[in-house]
Length: 128
Image (tube, rainbow, N blue to C red; front, side, top):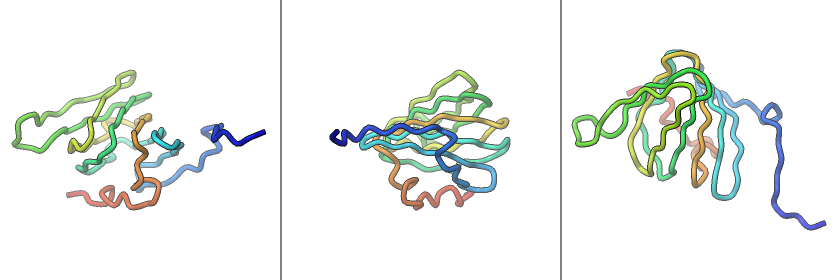
């Protein structure tokens, strides 16, 4: 039987990574896309950042308050995304978020977030 590259995992078997004290995640990746379970405690902050990857954020439980764009520029706005809602972020759009309650968020990225895979996502520790 040839190797087709097909992989199958149970979420519970994927290691839970601590991003910072109040954010953890599990990541599953393919060649051109990535899916992640992200768990944020109420009050957790994802600092402002941007990335080349397109992002879909589906809130399974809880709510995230997003600030999208660069403050003071055209198109800057904020939005609360709650359970059962999905947000699309195009490539290179600056954004930050705060968990309004304990939140389980399912993120899909294309292409995969290399900074998440190699641990270079240092923006998580920059609260400015």
